[in-house]
Amino acid sequence: MAMALTAARLIGDQFSAKDLLEIRLDKDGNNIAQALYKIEKVSGQDITHGGGADMDMFLHYKNIDTDTAEDGFIDYSSAQMLVEQATKGDSVIKIVAEVILDSDKTSYETAFDAWVEGGMEGDEPELTKHTLKTGEITLTWGDDTFV
Image 1: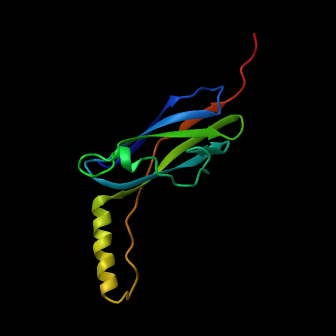
Image 2: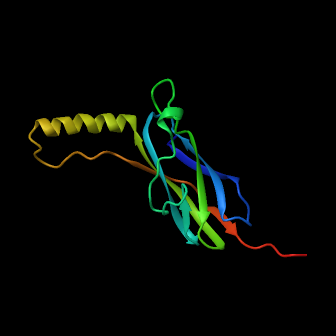
Image 3: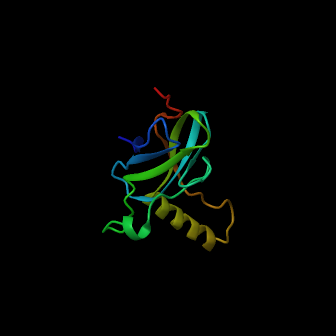
């Protein structure tokens, strides 16, 4: 089984621009060094997240002081994301995660140190980042009718 990303609405309805989503990251037994999130618009209105950040801006939704587990790793198994539609209408989005595994971070640091010790010849090592996406999430913001 591979890592997986899912999301569901916790708070929000069709008469509000704002929705609170819960993001769940199935780590598949991996220790995560970092997970950042952004929004991919499939169709519809523009969306902001995290209190006003553009859709394509990655944000870290965890607090080192309160979300770090006893083993020293931040618990990335779930996070909450506030999203807001810019205008009324329908928006179809996906949540995108950029995940760095602890094992990839360690490998990168080892390769980087060797590269520096070797006089920085050749290409600088690259840190492996894993991209995960949720399924499509439909958000609606409209007006109610008086009856």
